[in-house]
Figure 1: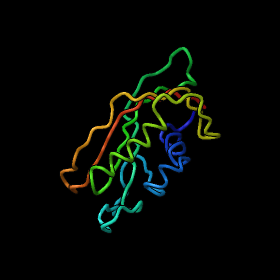
Figure 2: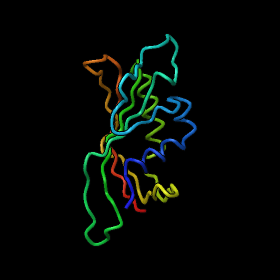
Figure 3: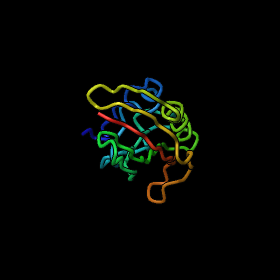
Length: 140
C-alpha cells in the first residue's frame, strides 16, 4: 500500500510553477515548528508554504489496492493575494487530473476539487491561508 500524503507531496513537488512560489516549502500534515511567513517586504518563496493533510475519504471494498482519500490543501502566505495565487497553481495542477504516474510514490487515477479555495486569515499568526479540499483516487 502507498502513503497517500507522500503521493500528494511528491506530485506537488514536481511542479515548477509551484516551486517558483513556495520553493521547497511543501509539508504534511502541518507547518513545521518555527516556520514564519514574516521575513521581507517583497514576496519570497521562503515565506510561503503549502500544507497537505489527508482528512478521510472512502474505501474501495471491491478493489483494495485503490485508495480514495480526501485531502485538505492549505496555501500559506503573508498576504491574501499570494495565498490565492498559490491555490490557483495547485488547482490548475490537481483539478481534473488523470493518469499521473508518480513512480514509487503511486499513481493518481483521478483528482477532483471537492471544495474550491476559501480565503481566511489565521487567527493566531494573522497570515493569509487559502484552503481547498480534493478527492484523489490513487493506487500503488
